[in-house]
Length: 498
Ligand code: NAP
Image (tube, rainbow, N blue to C red; front, side):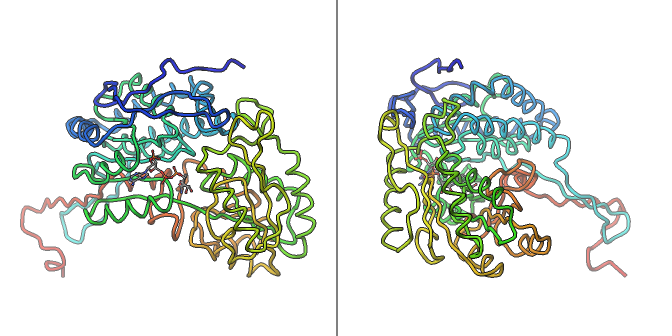
């Protein structure tokens, strides 16, 4: 395999169609090797101001471009992403660490989103409805909001940006995007693709920098009318309260504490495969990662044995080596957090069946690797069963029946994803009704969302909005109700009705 490289060793902001150099910079490290890949600008609030003034100007014209023509740019973006899929995937593995197979999956998600949202250029459906009065016409339509801000995390550096920026652009907005400082390369590559696809200048602006400066400046900026954020619970709550003060629309997608339920009538081999993929894929650093297994007590021992046997076969290492199935942890802070939860789990009395340690022998010593970890005999109230660890760590909780499994699943503050393995059709339908999460899987793990369905969660995972699917359009548009009276006289709703 030929490994691709970046043609620059320092990235630049992309503002008003120009590449703007910023003096201050931070190093971006490959988590598999801790080698420097590139430098990323550390901008300040003045770059946000610059981007917003360009965006405001550009958006006025863009809103008047017919949506099917706006969509043409997204088709081009989709074709270019397709053409560059391997390059993007390898760069994604280098900056984020996820294994190449998963990186290709993430890039594909972006490609799918481009074509899906380009199709919205010919839909963007509103409603026509009957009116109460004679000779009167009523309809609703979507209007762009104006300048929107998107703030994205490092764990899906391209897919999440496409979930947000593509619906925003097709519906006539201009975008200011602050990517995570850990993973700026996908933002650089996507900006280049938009530029080549012919997006008029000022409509997509990438401002690199820390959340506490650039992100905060976006949240505070009066002319950014929407913030669409994906990231941690703590940051999301801060952003929500700041946006609340300004009555600014905010869409939040935050953490998860997702569970796989395994019933006594489940296909256990299939359940093991589902757990393995959703718990240890991306080293557990997915918002939908499985971090709890709720197992019927009758099959607990057998499931444990089979899971341990399967975990032993996991190959861990640099994601560019396609024989590896589990890659590194993003950075030292991520490693420290996982290590801390090992102590917490032990102190709480959970039984450590596998893993629980840093891998630092040989090649592993050069990167941030943590052994896939399984705690058993956990109880629902333990912190390891309640809090997001964001690493390759699973806690097994046994339950006596279906009803308790649902209760344990729902007994956390988050509500992103859940799954049940069972062969009982009645349980399937009761589970999909009663599991209090935004995403439910049956006989599959907790990960693997498709872009044409809404993505997001209940309770502490967010604030009721959704990414992807047509539902994403609601974040980036305002509904306008329009009444046309062609009676030639004043007709009063609710009053001139017999
Ligand atoms: P994070 O620390 O909250 O960072 C997310 C983004 O917010 C980054 O771009 C960050 O910038 C920025 N930021 C930080 N402080 C800010 C502030 N005060 N104002 C504005 N922006 C600020 O989260 P993360 O560690 O990158 O991501 C992991 C989290 O994301 C997990 O909790 C995971 O569950 C969640 N996630 C949720 C979903 C979902 O759809 N529900 C999907 C993926 C991930 P810098 O880092 O550059 O400073």
